[in-house]
Length: 275
Ligand code: CO
Image (tube, rainbow, N blue to C red):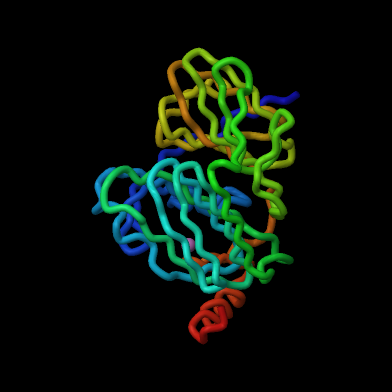
């Protein structure tokens, strides 16, 4: 077993997206354009309705997958393929935009806490124009396991200790674990050696390979097949890994392709109503 080291630690930036939702942007920042195959990571967390009430009205995507994972609050999803779904606490929406989709995510509450994450996962060139696919996963379908003393893991994607997350058929073979550690606990979580992996701490602080990583920070990990997490106090974090694509990335807003020409085509197709 080779332990993954910490290569870089970066802090998220305040950002605004959708129709004016305030959030923290962790990947897709000036310091970190992407972390192959991950194109963007946002955390939205506010109990001030002004920060989220405008939501994400109709907007397009092409060429990658958007993953929404809710911790608190409720959002309604609707898209132009006829899919609708209510995203509540603990639920996941794994949306493969493929050749093109137009969707909206709108808050279903006028006050209270709204808290969750959006991750963008790239698609290989061969899958960028695939048919759109939508996996709407209720909280009850996300297994939570005890992984040693004081360690709880919700498995959204990938396998761990004989349990498997509900998300399937994703090109980059991702691991998406929501990990909670009690004070003093240690977890050694396996990740495929060839995957890129990162940890995003959303509460408390954790030590990885001798480096402290605190709330609001992402740690980009070196290669290895196990991530060793050591908790001083209570800590909650995401451990996410995926197979890197090692392909050119051309991105323009909600379109992520391999070449500038494919981006121009995406804009033309969207403007002519071909999504
Ligand atoms: Co979207």
